[in-house]
Image 1 (tube, rainbow, N blue to C red):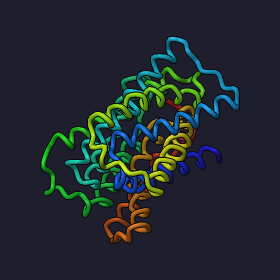
Image 2: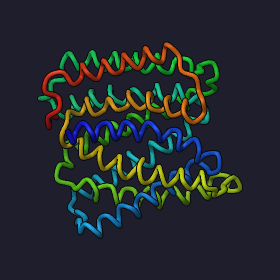
Image 3: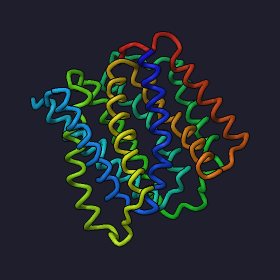
Length: 293
């Protein structure tokens, strides 16, 4: 039951972070606000680590994972996503990032040669992607694309995060899910805040109640709770089933947009939602909710 709750919690929160980012970017710049998000999250994790007395692991494997996480989970993917969305409509960006589960399946097959992906999970991946396509069809705005580089940036963000999740699954089994995020987030904040100040238009930065709440929500819920829970799940369930979260978050994002901005929903989006949910049932068929690679 804890696994199901954790899975749904990550889906719900990550699905609403798109709305929180949208609100924050009305007052703040992308790289700088990402750095602030990571800084607040790092401070929160530091407090938890001190209160709980959780030790920071500093062996060779842990240090390697910390730097890989900082670069390939936080700095590079978030930088690419924010940069790419200057040229790519948000609907198409979400669709492009939905390549993530396919990448996890490919990388996990390479890293864990004994693993069988299984017919049901292959079908689930294909149908899940079709569902996301239908869900976001009217928001793709393909005619608005001015640069293929923006599209490639989103794809490389997915590649980056898929790479990290395999590394952690294979080598990070002994790392504490709380402390393992502290150093990477601290490193990311230390890099992204100065980069944002030096390269972005700082005159745009205005701290209002909405922008501050956006940073707080993204740090506490969108980073601390979700990443800790995600890596906790990573140790307990199948990689491909976990990666299908990338198919569910667009559903939550559309609902959040409908509530906050009165964005319309139509039959294609309902059809896409049904297909995505069906793909999850296929992926979960059998004994997938076990600690398998």
